[in-house]
Picture 1 (tube, one colour):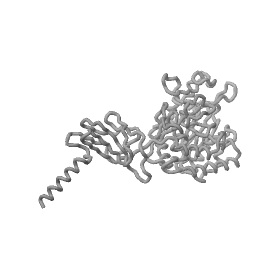
Picture 2: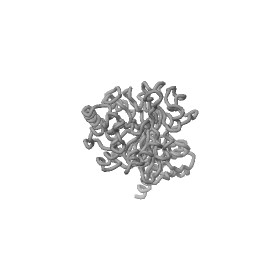
Picture 3: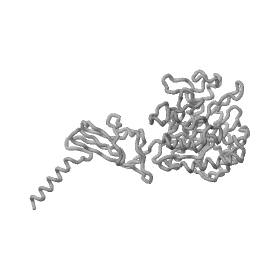
Picture 4: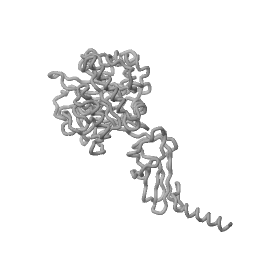
Length: 428
């Protein structure tokens, strides 16, 4: 009996020698994840880890997925992370190191926010674009170069009857192409007003839900943008949404094409802020939660050129050859000129964000590097990243509303490459 017990103990000991030892080895090789269980971590973070000894191999993985080897010194760089399975709130991150003799590892359960990339500003043949809406959605989902997307058709460019038909088509495609966990769509449109003379405003309006709760004829607005009014727009959504967090509006176009001669349309964001502040119960702080600073039309932030900044495309003619803004407009057209006003009272309103979109009209793959008539030289479009645990409409929407986003001017996830690069601005 004693011999059998001794043999069992020896066998167990030999098995342990060949097993991965958790956290620390007899030789002093150790790894300890200092991040607490159920903590929130974000793709792009450095995981807080303490390593002792001299490991020759360092790697990490999420759940039972493949190992990653991206580190900065001894800190795992959470890059190109796998998504959290739908229905799960947490994932296990395991960090493993080896010195060729001993192998040790540690595991922590965390809430992992992945960054999802997409383009939520483009047009199709339902307004002034060139390609059918279903074709564009099919291109995006087939090539899988966006995680989320939606069109923003011009609402005033049609009759009431035509817009009702187009609005139905928008909602139908939003429903058909929504694939929770893989691809998210939003219901949206572009509203335009010239209420404040040349300080024109192009506002993209995004909805959390998709259904028949909105009056499509009202959304169309006036066929003459001079007849559209901010107060009416805000009042309408106050009445129908019941909750401000169901609607987000992003103004764009710090500068538009010349209307005629030397008359330029542009959006002076300080002026717009002040005008909207005078509206009682203004939707400025409820609905206007950011501004588009990158698009295929150019860069709307950075009034002076910074040498070495990649793919800078300002609106000034000396930068891109387009005879647009005269010098006297320079102090007014840049987004940062009005950011202080738009970001005030941060404790009483949602975070004011910088976002990006392609504003694509002429090719069927918005947010890609395919040639566009106003995108000569394959200049990049604007694109947006959203931090969320899952790729679902509710989670992406809530993240946008909370300001968990960033924007870049870059060559997006393309059909022939997953590489992305460019200049970026934090949205939060």
